[in-house]
Length: 205
Image (cartoon, rainbow, N blue to C red; front, side, top):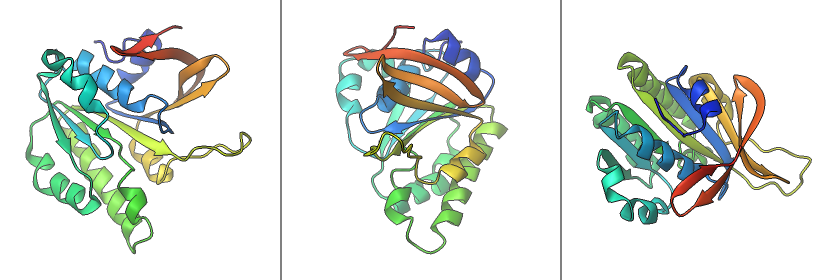
């Protein structure tokens, strides 16, 4: 089954239903999720793509409508709305693949509120349980802050919760050779490099 198009990454994904990709803004997380949606949802559907940030995906999807015909896109920009959507709608939709881009964007806006961590953990638990119970795939992105000191590696908001619920976790970053993806859970130590084109992700190693 084709997910990202990278044999190295796909062999990891096939062994876990829940997959998280984290990295700084602009590193390629949305492009990667859309590449997976384009490849996977031709064969496995229906698919739901929940967008919680900007609408950058509009341009790619509008130019390739036929390739995303099995994907239902939802824009949610408020944490309470997201919480309500999960409890009242998502739990009852018989999807086969779920994308959340990004899974921690709205949480970062309410992290200061009392019980926010408990609610966030509960929400993720419900989503993951549904995916496991229905043998469906979950692909999510998580954003981290831009590093101002290269010696400091930032982690995503709510990362301890994300680490608990996601079977596979991939770091997307840049080095002197370009953009790369590296699996950090389970740890692989292998960096797979890619470029972003108008047609999406192109693997170069």
